[in-house]
Image (cartoon, rainbow, N blue to C red; front, top):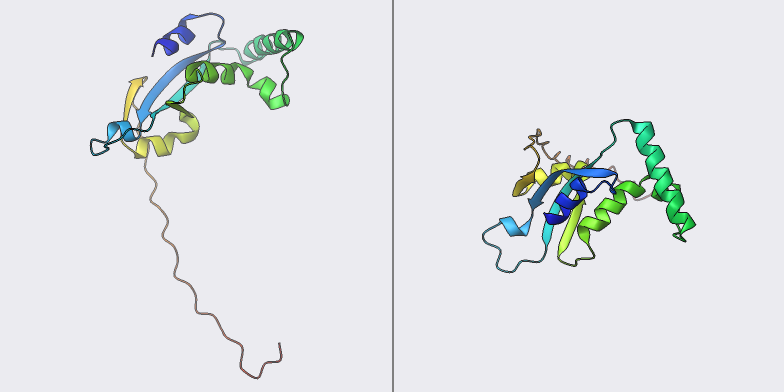
Length: 146
């Protein structure tokens, strides 16, 4: 949580953490051995204007390239502000497991969870579609040549 506060306070970071949700085995009382701390985080840009936020990110990317950092592709450059925060929050810890809240929302809210930062969100749980019964297959007659 200290790293989250540092990201939100430090002007170096181009984004802020708006939601942190703890989920998984840490919240189930019957679990005897804990494996990791599973957290889902939601990150938003500190800059409200999309174009200015993109320019700031590209300036950061250009400075890193000039310093010798190599990006694998265009998407890594465009999302650098986001992945920089994600990496800082993880801090090379083997115990912390981070997930993107926006992408994993339905899973996170379906298992035991607790909101540490941000507003609780309720979503309509979708029912799992049932598997349709298999249709009877028509068999070829025994005397069929193929």
